[in-house]
Structure formats: structure tokens, C-alpha cells
Length: 400
Image (cartoon, rainbow, N blue to C red):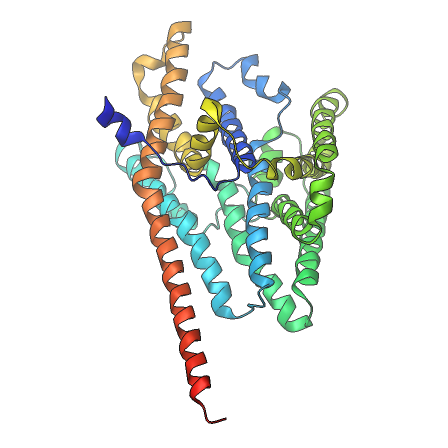
């Protein structure tokens, strides 16, 4: 028993910010819960998730990513490091964090689909390797949940480039460059959604999903709201902390109002869902961040569950849908019986499998790669210090 526990045991870094782990845990559980309703019969239960007072889990992930990456970018920029090497090092760190795990799962799904089930369009598969499958249009019906990862990867590529270019070309401070980029991308995304709405007839949930909710160009503002949070937290930290409780109340209030009032008064309003719903959701989520960013630690079983789930969240995101739900659970024939016992059994196996697979993937694949990444950073920093010390010695020996 101890050997089995050791296989799945994950060490928890005490320096982690517990409040952000709560947000990440909430986001991934909401995403998996939403997709898990595919296991239920075609009935009203499938729409039950829409009545829960929860914001969209993917939108939470977007704002969280923007907040974390925006914070990293601002700290780098405030060190006056504007070189291409700094930008490239930022990209390397992000890509080492996201790409190996993604490509690992993608290759497994491609192999299983091709050799076991068949059915995907081979000419579209290469687009998944460069995240071009849903930049402005419908995401193909293969590995559908990674539409949101495409948005994040394009954010990692474009936003730092725009900020660095603004500093170099416009000769402005990092503070101004970050703010201008935030405003520009939020306004561009909102206007693009409005322009698209004017030229597309939205008559179904499928059209809304494929042309507005699940495309890169229509969701970049979600991530930029997170960057806005990082901007306020860094440059106006006292305000960020001082009003954290009021901000949390406002965020929850907006979330509840938009969740319920929208279903009461805008059930068929395509304009609301294609334009206003994104803005309200982003604002509500962002307003909750000041409070949770100040929750530094926790304890007990809830703390361990939340932190564990947060650690394996990225692996859960990658494996839960196309791999576990559709290629494993949906193809175990005896689980497809419609009885309540089998439904409960199917649902339980689904969640247990996700956690077991995700823990193993995190511990034995994702974490070792991140360790390599961190060692490279340490070595690079050490080399920089060594070079700096040599330069000082050289100057001290100079006759000048």
C-alpha cells in the first residue's frame, strides 16, 4: 500500500499562493464538470450546469493566465530588459511549460484515433501543432477542448512582442506600453466580435460556439483582463489590497446577476451572448482576484485537495475530454447501459481515471520537464552573475 501511495505522492511547495490554487482548482473542476455531462442521457440534466452560479471555467483560466503571465512580463520589463534574448527566454519558458505535455497527449490521441477508431481529417491535424485550427473560424471536431489553449499560445506569442515593440519604437515606459497593449487588444477584440456579429446570422448555440466562444480572435480580451489585473496589482498594489473584500463582493454580485438575469431576460438574445456576456464574465472574474491573491496559505484536507488539483490541472485539462471521456469511457461497452447503477459507475470511473492519469502524467512527465526548464534558468542566471563578476574584475584591473 505504501508503495502505491509513493507512486502517486506529489510534494507540495509551501511557497505556492493558495488563493490562486483555489482559482485554478475551481476552473479545472468546472471545465471537467461541464464536459462530464456528456456522460448523461440526452435530457434536462445536460443543461443543469447552466443554472449553477458558476462563471465559465475556461474564462477563469484565461483571466488567471493573463494575471500570472502579465505579472511575469511586468517584472521582467521593470528590470529594463528589452532585448530579443529576454523575449526569447520568456517564450522558451512558456513553451517548455505548455508544449511538451500538449504534444505528448496530442500524439497519443492521434495514434489511438488513427489506429483504433479512425475518423479524423488527416489534412487538418498539422494545424494542431501550430495552433492554427481555430484562429478566426470553427474549431475542427477533433481534440475540441484545446481551442482555449490555442488562444493562450497566441497570447504568449503576440502580447510580449507588441509590448516590447511599443517600448522600442515609441520610446515609452513599460508601464505605458503594458497599459496601451491592454487597452488596444481589449478594444480590438470587442470590436471584432461586434463586426462579426453584424455579418453572421446567429441562429443556434452551435454558431455562437464556433464563431464567437471558441475562436482565438474573439477571446483574447479574456486574457487581457487578467493582464489588467496584474497591472493594477503591480503598479497600484495598495489599492489592489485595500479594496479586496469590496471587489470580491462586486465580482460575485456581477456573476450572479449575469448568470440568472441573462437566462431570464436574454434567453434568445444573440447580441447579448455574442458581445456583452464575455465582458461581464471577464469583469466578474477579475474583481475576485484581489481577494484570492492575498490568500497565501492553507491547511487540512481541503487545502491538500485544492493544491493537488491545482498542480495537476493542466494535465487534467489535456486528458479529460478527447482521451478519457471519448476514447476510453465512451468505448467501454458494458458502461454504456442506461441503468442508474451503470450511469453512476460510468461517472465515478470517469473522475477516478482523470485524477489517476493526471497525477501520473504530472509527476513523471510534466514535472521533470519543468525541472529541466528551471535548471536552465538557474544555470543561465549563474552564468550571467559569473560574467558580471569577471567584468567587474576586468574593470578593477584597468589602468583607467
